Amino acid sequence: MQEHSARKRFVPIEPSEPKYGSDLVAAALREQGFPYICLNPGASYRHLHDSLVNFLGNERPKIILCMHEEHAIGIAQGWAKVMDRPLAAAVHSNVGLMHASMGIFDAWCDRTPVVVIGATGPLDATRRRPWIEWIHCTIDQGGLVRNFTKWDDEPGSPEAAVESIRRATMLASARPSGPVYVNLDVTLQEMELEAVPKLHDISRFRAPADPEPPRAELERAVDILAKARRPFILSGRTSRSEAGWRERIRLAELTGARVITHVKLPCSFPTTHPLFIGETGWKLSAPVLAQLKDSDAVLSLDWLDLAGTLNQAFPPGSASPPVISASNDFNNHRGWNMDYQALPAVEVNLPTVPETATARLVEALTPLKGGTVPAYVQRRLTVDPPAATGPISLMDLARAFNVATRDQKVGIASRPLGWPNNANELEHPHDYFGHNGGGGVGAGPGIGIGIALALRDLKSDRVPVAILGDGDFTMGVNALWSAAHERIPLLFLIANNHSYFNDEHHQGQVARSRGRPVENAWVGQRMEDPVPDLLMLAKAQGIDGEGPVDDLADLPGALARGLAAVRAGQPWVIDVRVPPEYCRDPLIELA
Image (cartoon, rainbow, N blue to C red):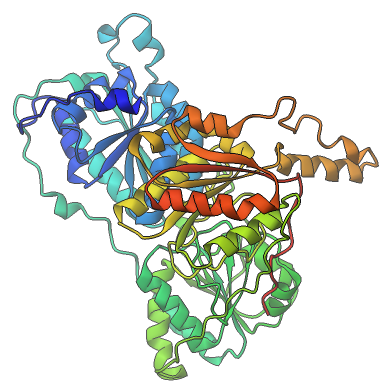
């Protein structure tokens, strides 16, 4: 396919004024600075597609062709996770939007900005082509995704479409960020313009700045932290800003606070810092729980599930230290889905993003707690390499990956369920990008490709690595074609246990609680007889690799070759066979 495309000649496009409604829409996408638009083609936006190619010349935005609409959203989500700004995606009519809806839900739960452009057959019934434009025409199409987007619109004219895209991009960007949807009638797209409309300059439509915390609430928070002797920081949803990263370190050092991060969120604090005490999922480990119980003040920086975490240490009705919450996530809360988690009990609400709250706290606390904080000495993980030979457990894979990447910069796009806590040294905002947000199996490959694309755009020296389960990989495998076609370097490291093991684990627990045979937990879960050939699936998309790797003796060499291939600019796949198991224990307990 790549060789075939390479022989195709693209006819150069002379710059011109917009002539059609879709030209104006394409120009509106360009003025937002989107470098790409991820899409799977569809007739409902055939006019916009023409304008992207034959009016803009397939530049700014360039089309990233995807095999499925969910992959288009996933790639855009991954790119935005790195860049902290939205990317555009286009989906075909109601059917494409329904395909894309899982990806949109992931982006919503991940609080990641994506501008989704949709389209519909003519709302004017007299203009519809027989059959196809009737089934592809939906009244209130945005209603399909309204409960998990920040905003949607169906503009009635080309000029209104420009305003809609401007508003959509602004709202997607404003934190808490999220996906938005703009639906374009075919009639609007094909309309010939009588004149190019006069428009305000795009610079006048920037997203609003993050709010400043109210003075009285900020003063209460400063007073609590200034008096605290054993403060505790829950470092949650943050941007990829290096300045924000440094401010969080300084705040922890000023206050002497112990810090934890969440395995489902991008890294927000260095795991090698002496004040870092561990990554956690929804359940706190015994050492972390003990230190939280011993704290005399808690600061939450937009923690993923604040009430669920606090209630483990301080059940309702019990005594607890004062809690400060820095978050404006409540702006996205609604009743359709419960992604907002339980309602936390707090003493102080700072209704802003962690970066702004942290900066103001540092400013106020510096003269109270001391102006100079010595640079911290990195605390390295002590990880024994796995055995020389034998079968590969998930813990073995984590250890081997740690050893293989210890002296290399990597950007971990994802880690599978069961990956041990504290298994990776994370010292930069681009070291780990968290989970997909909404738990959509099959999202990992697309999001990983978007992350790798963004790191390439940044000219980063990191090797992007998506560590995936085989279920996630097989559901999203044809996303790999886009990586092959665009030559996006990314290592797909597959922990392949031939099972949808999260559910197999649940089946074992249910059987045990009911006194039934635990040995039957594998039924309806195992991808065996036949075992899917994951490497062959990757090669069918144009990506090479190696595997299955099922002996520890072969794992270091496979990892070295895979990392080298990605450094050389290739996407690469390694199929590592691991047994079905749940690796709940941390790789290392941090004192």
